[in-house]
Structure formats: C-alpha cells, structure tokens
Image (tube, rainbow, N blue to C red; front, side):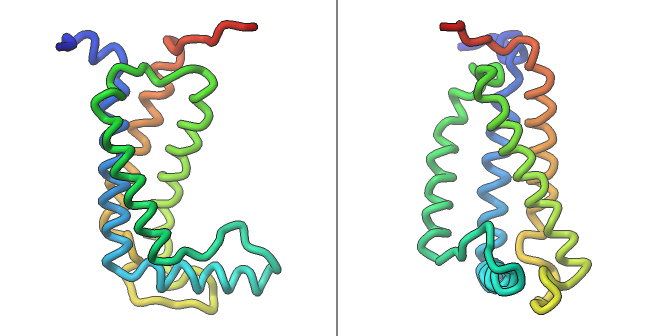
Length: 160
C-alpha cells in the first residue's frame, strides 16, 4: 500500500478522480434537464448564421456513448495516483482537457443569466447543467493546479 508521502508526492490521483466524477454528474445534470433540446438547435443556428459549425449535432445515442466513456475513465482512478502528471508530451492534452471542462462549465451560468445561447434560441432557466457546473469548475481548477505543481517532476522522454 502506498504511503501517505508517496501519494502526496504525485498529488494527481484525487484531482483526476474528482474531475471525472464531476464530469459524470454534469452529464447526468445536462441529460435530465434537456441539454440536447438546447445544444442541437444552437448548432443548427450557428451553422445557418456562419455557414459552418465547428461542432456536430448530438443524438441521444452519442450522448449515451459519451456517458459510457466516462464510466471507462472512472476505471483509471485507482492508477492515476501513481502518475505525477504524466510525461511532458501528455501535459498539453491534459491541460487542454482541464480548460475545456472549465469553460464548458462556465458557460452554464452565462447561459442562465442571458436566457439564451444564440439570440434566436431562448430556453427556460436555469440552463441545463447549471447545478453541477460549480463541481466541474472546482475540480478542473484543482487538476490544473496539480499539473502545474508537478510540472518540475514530470519525466522527460528520452531523445532518440
């Protein structure tokens, strides 16, 4: 069993698990409050307005697939404590994921305050995912802070 000092040395496992659990709760919050009824019309409206959309529409089947992947990621929680933030090559992707979760969650209070995503699409307040967004913000900031804190100890890949 790892000692307290070895777990504290990496400090990466708990933030990873917290972010994963917060994301799972956020998915549930969005799914039970009509996220697809807001998201898909927003994608269609932006596609009509600007000619192309960077995101595709999401079907209920795809949403179930995302939730299934979240369950798979939860399986990595026990091993994530042994990883001190990963290799240097993995860090940009991990920071991007943390930033993506942060800004995704911050959009929920903004949408709730405005009452719409695009001008032509209003929705009943609060926005889907609002109640779980604080957990997602806190856990993504915690994970980002641990990534920065462990950056000096991250193993550098051997050059070929």
